Amino acid sequence: MQITTYLHPWRLRLAKQAICAGGLIAYPTEAVYGLGCHPLDGDAVARLLALKHRSVKKGLILIADRVDRLQPYMDKLPAAAMEPVLKSWPGPATWLVPAASGVPGWLTGNRATLAVRVTDHPIAAALCRAAESPLVSTSANISRRPPARTPLEVRIRCGKEVDLIIHGETGGLAQPTPIRNALNGSLHRA
Image (tube, rainbow, N blue to C red):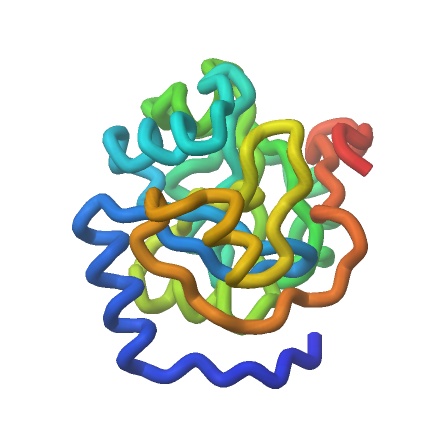
């Protein structure tokens, strides 16, 4: 992925502070601007869901800069099922995997699976490195409305509910990343 935007270290420090303080951040991803927070901060996730008018039953995607950040959230997959997942990462491929025991229902939508992606977007990956954690990642918009593709659109769609907007280029995909079930390969979102 060729993204020309440089993310200054002080912006990464601001993002880490916002995430650790329970804040919501907006940042460019492979296709659109995403909204994110720390996945284990229930108050931050509740703010994010309220902002989007999104039901907790839908579940959320976790992104990370590397697989080992996601492993505490994932149950074991058979090697044959894990192979295509690992081959697609880092990259714009989101997978439904069995959720580890104890993963909060606000992430899974109270299902047995969790949506995860190891992103190749340099800014999104840098944010995960800075936070030393995966991040919740959902489109920056009110549910069923067009997602934001620029920082200005984030501000218009989300108002002042977002604590920090990271400026940068999206990855150029026309649609959000596809979501596939890792156990059977079925497509959940094209």
